Length: 459
Ligand SMILES: [Zn+2]
Picture 1: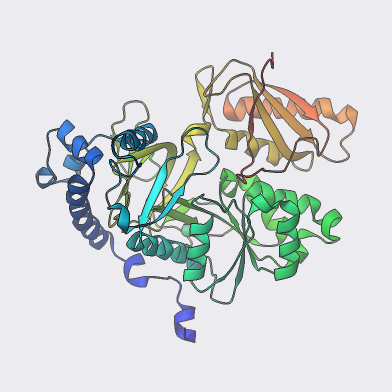
Picture 2 (picture 1 turned 60 degrees about the horizontal axis):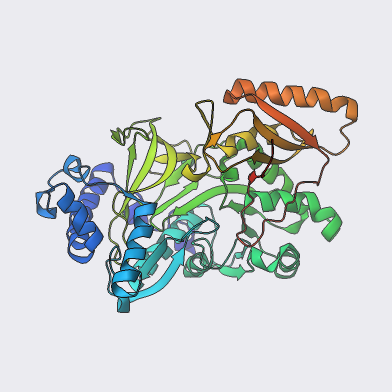
């Protein structure tokens, strides 16, 4: 790669700087082709068209397209199961490509129950890698940078598939993987000297806390200049971003590659303005009302449940797929100068809690607790007596007070936390303060820190 091409700001200037009209035309062309393909190659999707009495040819507008039924994760799992019963393998109903063209299977991580499988062909792997390149290029990474990947590697979409994308950009990938244990990750940071760390924000916070005792130096002296958050919402939480930024002296990025086609990365400025949607040529994004499931207009500030449709995909393209994630979108140009609409993930559908009719996301509670740092360590657990979303009030929180917070100060801290949560989140929590380091930081094999703990007999 020569010097001038390294200096460009975008990986794929042709696509990434398309005008809105050009992009819309490209999306529509690819969508039409994709719908025909899905209809012809997947029994599940074929039935969806039949359900509303439409054929791909009869879909002449975006409004027509929105008449197609949504696909849920449960439906996806059921289709896999039915396929096993019918064909002896899970790829017969929802998957479009024939088995011999599928070169990779990956899955979501850490979720309970039957995993949903993502099936990719050689073409899809190329598209996925291109999206990873777009994200890291925007963040300022260039060939020669060393990237240490400390997420869960196995199966997870942010695991080995991500390693492949990192290499596709010409970066040097050190895929250590959190499964190998915190100690090994830290040893490899010392040994390989990465400038870039990809990890969960909670692992980053853990490193900041522990670096002095484990390594005899501050996290900011490790030479990490980019911290990419993944797997947890912390990359979009201002107080967490600030701690990571100061703790590592690094630029902090929030990024996502949901379902393989929906990719975004934030600007990397101190102020968080959401993530830029960087894959509109391979993913159609819609918002719907979470109650009525009716489309929500994609205007500045709109909030709704995310629906995505893959375009220009072969293996297991999603068709109007809902994961339950709530997004807010921003269509006005961003101050950073990068093109494209932006989105903030308000909460993951699986995580949402309902307390006395108020919807609340663990990430929002985490934000409040981290906001009180250093009077709190930022660590907390939400204790439930049964899995959510419905919570029998009061909402119970276990929160670590910070190092050196005296007993007399704790009552005031508790009261302030309670007041802040009541005013900010409209729920009245019951808070138990516990000493620093008493809530486990190890994130287990999935690499994600669980904020929610279901405790039998909690009350
Ligand atoms: Zn921006």
